[in-house]
Length: 100
Image (tube, rainbow, N blue to C red; front, side):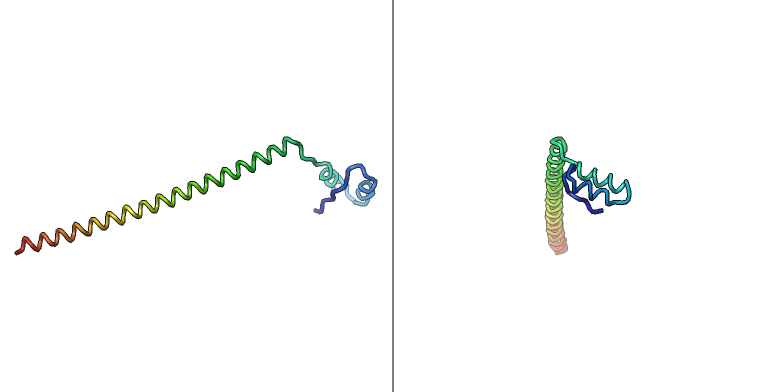
């Protein structure tokens, strides 16, 4: 629905509103014209914006920590595999020495 932004008490507004056929349409236009942002609404919008920014910050922080944790886990697994491979090689060398 197209909203008109005209002052509420102007003669043009009365003329425009009388051109609409349904009472509902006129009421919805008048309601949209009379909507004003109170300081309370502005405060709530600012608070919502702050909450959205904080939410985004903490979401990014959690993602970063998760990525860091995954990277650390991969490094630990890599070191563990390296140690296991070294132990296998040492066991093979010892087994060969015992056979001699």
